[in-house]
Length: 105
Image (cartoon, rainbow, N blue to C red; front, side, top):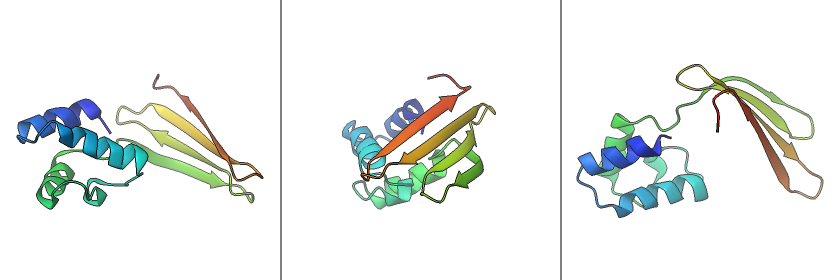
């Protein structure tokens, strides 16, 4: 999600500044998977954001899962830069995420 575009769009829609924090918490803390799932903002705003912005600007190109539940995903940005991520599940229940990218930080 492009937070600068989100901020600008919220301003253009005349939304109060606290809406940005509501949405980012819902996405990054509560792991909502789309604007329609962000139930802390009004339905009309969710509809507008879904219509106006891309929620996820990555495209999944390949995915692999190992028998232990660990997984690997290859994604591409809108300008065709590769991002690879690996989720490693540990016996104690914890998880590690590794990310490598051609796209930069």
